[in-house]
Amino acid sequence: MTHDMHPQRWGDAAHAEPLPASTRELVELAFGAVDTPAVDSVTMPSSELAAHLLGTLADIVGPEHVHVDDHTRRLRTRGKSTPDLLKARAGDVSDAPDAVVRPASADEVDALLGWAAEHHVAVVPFGGGTSVTGGLVAAREGFAGLVSIDLVRMDQLLEVDPVSMTARLQPGMRGPQAEAALAEHGLRLGHFPQSFEYATIGGFAATRSSGQNSAGFGRFDQMVVGLRLATPAGELVAGSSPANAAGPDLRQLVLGSEGTFGIITEVTVRVRPAANETAYEAWRFESFTAGRDAMRHLAQNQILPTIIRLSDETETALNLASQSDVGGEGVTGCLMIVGHEGASIDGRRELIASTLTDLGGSSLGEDRGQSWLEGRFHAPYLRDSMLDVGVLVETMETATFWSNADRLYTDVKAALEASLGEGSIVLCHVSHVYETGCSLYFTIATSSGDDPLGRWIAAKSAASDAMIDAGATITHHHAVGTDHKPWLAREIGPVGVAMLRGVKDAVDPTGILNPGILIP
Image 1 (tube, rainbow, N blue to C red):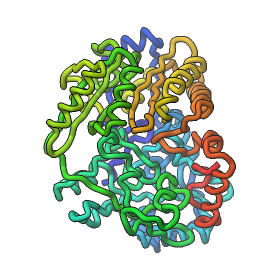
Image 2 (image 1 turned 45 degrees about the horizontal axis):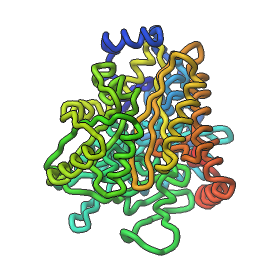
Image 3 (image 1 turned 135 degrees about the vertical axis):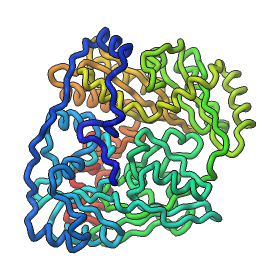
């Protein structure tokens, strides 16, 4: 069973629900809701792979693991970005792969890359299909075909080292699978991005994912201690020790490479003991600036909780922190969510509560914290429900140093408001914090209009320009894909681009690996 997502929506279709009546009333008042259902039927393009090539694929993985049927190919078409979804809802499946191939081992992945290089066939690694930046829309021009290498069969926990507190995982394990397998050993990974239910270990690594528990457990790239990478030039095994001075860290070169340098076939991660105690609570601050200052104080004094996030005034007023009760009764000021997880949390929880109180925070108890926890993975479903009534809802994120946070927040919000026009809503929250800075996560809501894709591209471009002009990064945790490529070139400069291209040429000289993704 592959637990596939719906081709035109996020997640499990059984979980998709229309907007609650109260929320729909607010939407109609703000945007004038118009029902815009997705196209029901589509016509898939024919597979362009020659019969003899399909036969040699079957020799590698077995004929039962080579799929050219329309249904499977449609499920492996693109990811879940707004352009991806809008095209899918309109019945556009022009980016469908010619075949979906499911290897079971690193050796089979190696053989597939050798086959692809020999026959000049482009390949796209596929994990959970949760990319929101066009990371699965490979350029197929000039190739003999396009094949999706679906890692769903590579889904095992290979080894646990309880002394070193590490675990070796295959890349196709989804977030819940990994946590369940580790729980049998009394361990946890603790990586919970919003895509957790569908995203995979390989995808976390390939995109430098950052989860909601990052304040306590770190980003995914901080969890990785080793990995294996299959490339057309051979295999890279990186991570023989927890740290070294043996030149540049090649693990970091692979992390975030989005399938352009190779296909990750194993990941070794740091793990933690399972949490015996948990608590999730809400706090109120008078302003977004006051709340950010409190977060900075916690980070710089090394007293962060496991989870911490802060909504600005508008997001707080709309109660968007609770995805299960959007538009419900909110609070004034700015809402902060604080989560504690561990073997024993009371002492640290008391210290953090005392510090937040001293810094101007007011405790709101655990009800709102629990509400956030229950709805922490629901936002993408809300995006689909809003699209159903003609309202475009999308997100973007960035990061900067604390001293630049006010400018970045103001400039990006202004750019979005100017592009989207009157009647649109722009929200923001601090999603991740560090001693030196933070990530700002923006959400927009606007009428789809006659050209929703054009509206979104224009708004995203304006916001991306503002991010780079303000000296921030183009992405903190969504990765580059195709959507962020023009701004990546501005962020890293011509020397940085040349370095990426040099690595690409060395490990993938014929350019078959996820062509058109990441590298400017």
